[in-house]
Image (cartoon, rainbow, N blue to C red; front, side, top):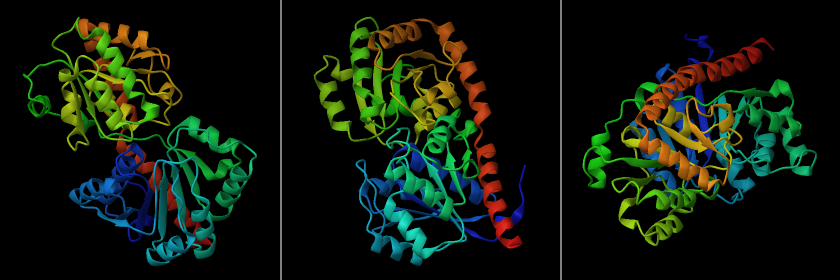
Length: 387
């Protein structure tokens, strides 16, 4: 249902302190794209990173104005942002609604100082980090909580765990809201597996174990290789495919090369046609150690993939062991081996999990997510107009 038209004639500027290939960036694009379809004017700004080039092109393909800026920075190690660059950025790029996205546990202090100086009217932030990287009560947490009260209309958390974490840092409940990530179910259940099999150069119908997420330490990609290596002889037709990129990409490639089954392990890099790879997945595997509310998991659910993952923090808000996924404890490679054996050899189990996965994904429709964000924007504008 379309909400109030308060934001109809105002620009919404999305600024991502993101790397361009993770769930945080894709969430921002999904949100901006859906908001634009409602007739709102939107624009996206991201750091001047080579990794952001495909992301910006993807935005443009969706009809979203997007740019890379040398004035904002992000990397996997918490890149420092110059307050002088940020002041120039926020003074140059103005909009009635400013929505910041970060893969960190809070916005950088330099960003907070810049907001204090420039004082934009309505500022929102979505916090995508799944790690408790601050201690409640420490200096960084106190500065963050005070800055939220002073400068931000709302902090959005994609999971209940994220909400509880922010509240523990001192962010007041009236400035916090959980909005679960959303997924375009129709898009992700409409993939063509022939495109994936063709890209790999394998026969149509070849069983695939698909890992489609950032290839980073916390996703534990090497465990997938080890589990696959242990069952490879039992299932000689099965291939393992990594769809995505990340800091462990080369290490993963090296481990695959020395696994003894290198010819059956493929790293295909960043792909725009993720639904095609999900459609080809006999098993979707992600032995992640922690999540906020994984967009990759939602995509796999929407595609109806038989999922093998961990019942870790974050996943425990969407995956139900034995119902819509097979789950194992974090680091349990023996459990992963057993799960792969079951999913590769039990078609009835795969069928049951596929049905339940799609039913679960229906609870996280992207349009419901967008309604909630627009409602928050509208309420903020209404309050300021009434003052």
